[in-house]
Amino acid sequence: MSEIAKKTQVVIVGGGPAGSLLALLLHQQDVESVILELRSRDHVLERVRAGVIEYGSGATLREAGLAARMDREGFVHEGVNLAFSDRLLHIDFERLTGKHVIVYGQTQLQRDLYDAIDRAGITLVDEAEGVDLHDVDGGSPRVTFSQDGAEREITCDYIAGCDGVHSTTRDHIPDSIRQTFERLYPFVWVGLLSETPPVSDELIYANHPDGFALCSMRNENLSRYYVQGSAEDTTDDWPDDRFWETLKARLPRAVSDRLVTGPSVEKLVTPLRSWVSEPLRHGRLFLAGDAAHIVPPTGAKGLNLAISDVVYLAEALAGFYATGDETGLEEYSDRALARVWKAVRFSWWMTSTMHRFPGMSNDFDRRLQKTELEYLFSSENGQRSMAENYVGLPL
Ligand code: FAD
Ligand code: DHB
Image (cartoon, rainbow, N blue to C red; front, side, top):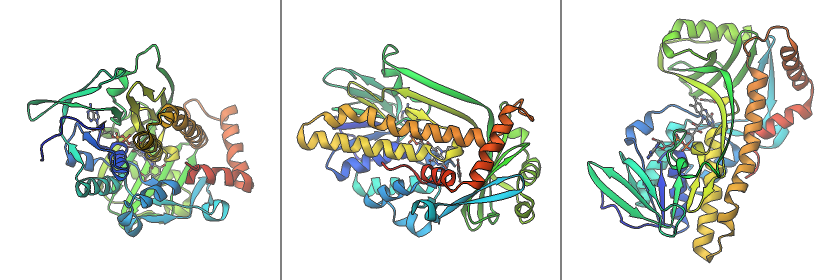
């Protein structure tokens, strides 16, 4: 790797989708940055995560020249299906909103971002350990870290904390300023990847009295499925046979009859929670993506929020360097949070509507959930609202 600069305009901590895209958007507007990533590239590229790219996220990637492979290999989905009481409701995004989503694995997107970073000659330091921030609220911030045992320091104008859910950059926002908002859901998702043809060419989100299930895909011979599990479950509790049996039981008969099962090639357990840390700025530090907020995966919003945050942040930083005007930087936190909270609301609504909550039998909450779904099945306005949020609110 080439020599690491001792000074740059923006140090970006974290080379996931938020950090990588931020560096590229800044580069395109002549702002220099260095990315510090804790893990190796292979590690980052092996994490199987998101699959749904909102319409506006797709447009952002296209405008930035980062969508060639996504447009070639990703799948345009003009709708999704909701399953309830052995019935399927097709939500037709194109008809209701004129928009669609793209199913394209985060792993693939991350690879595209890394390739573009290499082509642009942006420095991405991987396996950067012990990243620490100094003088965040003063005039000359610095970032120290070690790589291959050597201690390094970079001075900069601004720092972007894009270091994901376990962010340490976030800790530099003093407790006296920081507010956190949290909702924990009392269950997990168990996810399985299998080299089998997807059961449906569109996603199916299923509400079943025993629990939630989701059918997704990566390509013609790679399926991604999820089922709701108990809060304390680990992957050991979910051998393949149990997973397939559970999934089958939670899908409408017409769907489960054509489900093709096979050995898992990956399996994970992911907790469901909403968590927002405010504000997104302190002094010269800005937070973006999972470092600042987590949503339960039901609404498919996490990656898309990482993208919208960094679009706003890149605009604000580039605006400052072009004109010296700090207004964009001052407005970043409120602007990004306004969109974040709409995604928190939608993810909460999807999660509350589609899952079985412990203690829920024929009680008030179950009746409400049933009524919510009956309403959706019968109301085009209800469907349009769901579609509008799922394809993504405008940036
Ligand atoms: P991350 O991807 O977590 O990247 C942060 C990076 O920072 C990591 O590479 C990490 O190694 C690095 N890092 C951490 N600490 C340090 C440190 N101290 N120093 C340097 N680097 C550090 N979202 C959607 O939009 N649609 C979906 O369909 C969807 N499905 C999901 C399904 C599952 C099962 C899961 C788990 C998530 C899903 N998400 C989805 C969420 C999405 O994956 C995340 O929101 C997204 O990865 C956020 O990107 P990020 O760059 O902010 O964080
Ligand atoms: C996928 C993940 C999600 O969280 C979701 O809501 C839809 C699809 C996926 O991994 O394909």
